[in-house]
Each structure stands twice: as structure tokens, then as C-alpha cells.
Image (cartoon, rainbow, N blue to C red; front, side, top):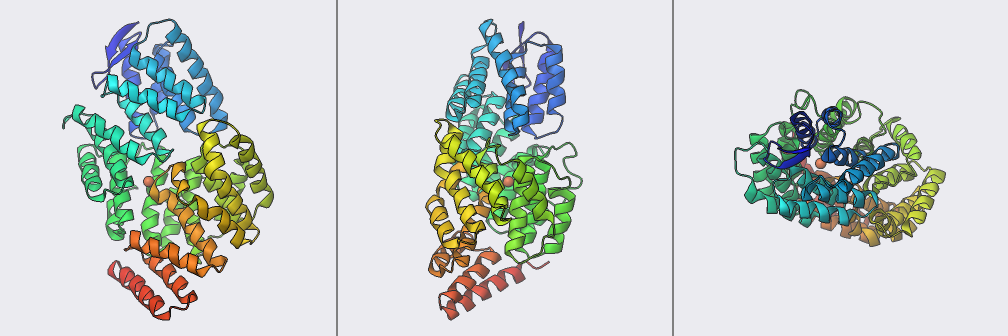
Length: 466
Ligand SMILES: [Fe+2]
């Protein structure tokens, strides 16, 4: 074993330069969501079976897939990495990665984050630690921590270096999620210009445009998805989802179906992110009175098979939403049963199941039975807790929309009006929000207010007509 340096000058313990170079390529693929990370990692481990960071990366990949079938591979990677550490030939940074992996697989996500952040204190240019910490914090809804983790790395990344745009993209995205839209867009555009292949910077700007309802700008920003990022993995579908959201707000539903077939769900996969994207898009269409055909049923059949996954509460919430709105009572009951069993545990997922996911699932179960008033009593208390499920504000917005839908169906119109008053204040450029506000105001007997809100919605749509 000897010490090598990656492209950012960070030391790597490896048996050969070839192993270190392949590992470097795998980490770069990971940072770009590229689909060749596994190939590079396989080459790295073939070149050096004792490459400790290679085994850590394998464990990260297996856990991030949130697929129970891949967990044994991740556990094996952790076991091998632990054996290598015991041999005493790895650096302090690498030890932190192994310890983080162990915490993550033990359902101690905060423990894992603490180790990655310690690795970053010792070497702020450890892009692997920064990125995986970013992703895990993201799926805990720790957006301020997400922002500050990236901010701490900024001084160590001068302009012009290959890794700098990745750090700028992480900072820009976290700024967007914490409501600092102008600097978020600035950092995101800076990252996108410096590294057009770095989708996370493009994604940060995409979120700003969505949140600010700059719908035509968003469509233009993502106009070249067909040609762009030919090697992007499943994250490509998420970018198509983003482009579809703009068209949903613009009420261009034929375009949405076209994008759904071409990019959001070109294949009927079991991938958690694919299903989450598709579910929240189809739910929006359904709620706007658009017939989605048998697409919803296709998702429901997949979600029924994932009722016991429970590796990522964020995606499990989407599965519950699909099962609830498809009135699959038995499948949802089994999912709730699994959540109750998990909720007595002490880990990160256990806590999220207990505090947020379980009431959400119960709410959707009552909703599935047509008992909207009881559903609302489950859903309203966890409105702010849903942020702890992680994912982005744009992704979790579907849950906010289902709560409004539930209030309207329950004929609790003053509650619906209150939720929509919040919504139009926070998303003043959203035509759908103003339309729904008009519905609630009319139901509350405020005809003038309803007319004004409806006029506002029509004006917003007209202003962004093609
Ligand atoms: Fe996104």
C-alpha cells in the first residue's frame, strides 16, 4: 500500500496509481450523477481489492439506491472496509469514511454525518465526504446544515479548479432550499457555466425558477434535455420531472404527457426516485381534473411491492400517497403495520417513521376510505414535520397539495382558505394556487374575493402564455 493523491490533491491509500485513478473517476461520476460510476468503481476494486475508500463508495452506492435487494452488497462492503481498517494501513480521513458507513448502515444518520464533517475538518477538499454528507442531510431535511456544510468548504476551492463548481452547486442548491433565491441562482449559474456537465448546479437554478414561478424561463432553461447529459443516470428523469412541473402550472397537459413518456417515466422502473417523480406529477394532473389513464395504476402496482421497503421515509411517503389515492386499503394497511413495527426503534428512520411517516400514512388511509375529516386530523399536525422527510421543497409540495385537497373534500373550507392564503403569499406567481384559493373563498361565501383570486390566476397564465 502507498499514498496517492486524487485530482484535488487529497491523499488516498491504494496499492497502485491505477486503482487510485479509477476511484477518482468513480467519485467524479458520483458527483455528476453519471451512470458509469459503478464501472469505474469496479475497475478500482479490481486493481486493488483492499482499496478502503473503494469499499466505502460501494457501500454508499448500495445504501443510496434505497433498494433492499442491494443492502447485502453494502453490508459486505462495510465488513471488508472494517477489516482493512483493522489492518492499520489507512489514513484518519479514510477511517472517518468507514465509521460513517457503519453508522449509516446502523440507522444512525446523524452519526454518519458527524464523521463526514470531521473528515472535512481535517481535509476540506474531501469532495466525497462533502457530497455524501450533502445527500444524507438532504434526506433528513437539514437544509440549514446543508447550506453551512458547503459554505465551510468554499474558501478551499478557488475558481478554475475542476472541483470548485461542484461545491458552488451544493451551496447554490442549499441556498435555494433555505429561501435565499437570488444568491442561490447566482451560485447555481456560476457552477453551471464553469461545469456544464455538473447537473447539480443546473438543478439549483431549476429550483429557483420553479419556486419563483418563472415558468417560461424554466422551460427554456431545460430545453435541451434531449441532447444534454447523455451519460446521466436516473437523475435525468428528475430533470424531466422539473421541466414537466412548469408545463403543469401553464396547464399545457399534452406537453406534460409527452414529457412523461419521453423522460419522466420512459421505463416502468422500481427506482424510488422514478416512482416519486412520477407519483407527484400524476397526482398534480389528477387533482386538476386531467385523466391520466392507466398510469396511476401502474405506479400503484409498483408501490404495493414496496410497502415493506422503509429505507427512505421520503420515498415511502410517496408510495403511501399512491396507495391511498388508488384506494388500496390492504396494501396501505400492511405499510402502516411495517411503520408501526419500525417506529419503536431508536434509529433515524425509526424516528421519522414514528413522528412523521406513520401519521401521514394513516391520513392517507382515512382519505382512501373517504373519511376526509379524520384524514385531516392526522395530516394537519405534521405539516411542518414533513420537512424532516427530506427531499426538496418542490418535491414535498405534493404533500402540501394533498392536505389542501383533503380540506376541500372534507368541506372544511375555512381551513382550506387558510392553507391557500399561506400558499399564495409564499408562491404569488403560481396560477394553480390562486385558482384553488378562488375555490376556497367562494366556498366560504366570499364571492368578491373569489373573483379577484380567479382574475389573478388568469392574468398570471396570460402573462406566461406561449
Ligand atoms: Fe429537484
